[in-house]
Amino acid sequence: METVFSGVQPSESPLHLGNYLGAIKNWIELQEKYRCIFCVADLHALTVPKDPQKFPEKIKDMAKIYLAAGIKAEKSIIFIQSSVKEHAELCWILNTIAKIPELERMTQFKEKAERHKKDLNVGLFDYPVLMAADILLYKTQLVPVGEDQIQHVELTRTLAERFNKKFGETFIIPKALVKKEGARIMGLDDPTKKMSKSATSPLNYIALTDSPETIREKIKKAMTDSGKEIKFDPPSKPAISNLLEIYSLCSGQMIGALEKKYAGAESYAEFKNDLAETIISFLSPFQEKFQALDKDDKYVINLLNEGASKAQTIASQTMAEVKTKIGLI
Ligand code: ATP
Ligand code: MG
Image (cartoon, rainbow, N blue to C red; front, top):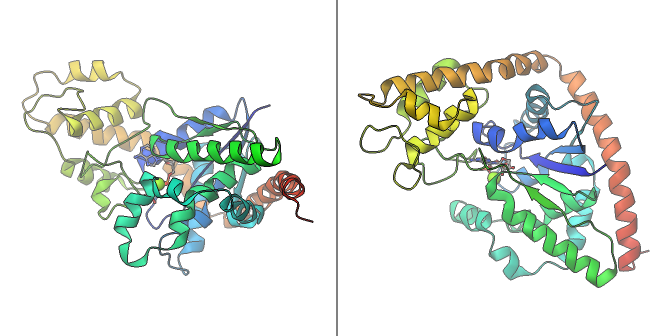
């Protein structure tokens, strides 16, 4: 059985529709066919400042989000990255074969470095190598991610190939699995940039946990394009195209059908109104499950511990093999 691995960082801000439509939604389907391993990437999250008082809740919330979205603990391994020490260990080994210019080229690093100029830590620079370690530890074949992470999976392939060439066949060369639809949901306040948890304004995203009132408010304030035509054409209508894509993914209706439905509309009002209600109904089953799990910390912690122990069994085997290959005793 082929292995699938992915993860999301427990950032300060909650998960958004982009994370869900671009990544997690696809994980649910993959569970039926593959050995799936999903981690709460808390070590990655440390690359930007975190409040130690709030961080434990964020970590647990992320696991609850996975479960509420439909990841099943009977089928998939769910665990917290930092509870399997091999992630940091393999990251260090891979650091010794990764090249500085390779990491300097990473788009995410360049963007985040710009935002965290005053506190540019080495972790932010090394983020893609830790991600490579995450993936390679489990001999992963497929990595379901949004478009922004393709570059990091490419680097993972480069590092795996380099290691194999230098020390002998060890790692499987993984592939990014990116669905065309939803792979790059744009910010509601700026359709030229991807929707992002670390955006400065909450008006950038719809959080999975946003209340109906907040969703209505955010969609009302979402940027639109000049003119009033509701047409999917990202180069000339980036904002409306993004809203149409979200509408289509949340309602299951084709974009063409939506264009027809709103052809000749006098303004964006009705379209936005319907879109908000569509998102609210789309998120409602998820939110109900999330609220139920919220009361059950003990269940979630148990499940994460079991997941960590299963993950560790695989990771420690890979690490033992890596150590032998490179001559550590
Ligand atoms: P941050 O801004 O803190 O990096 P993020 O929103 O980019 O947060 P991540 O935890 O880095 O979220 O990414 C989790 C997953 O969500 C990844 O697979 C990523 O490719 C996907 N993803 C992130 N943003 C989007 C988006 N706007 N559209 C589609 N997929 C996305
Ligand atoms: Mg990101």
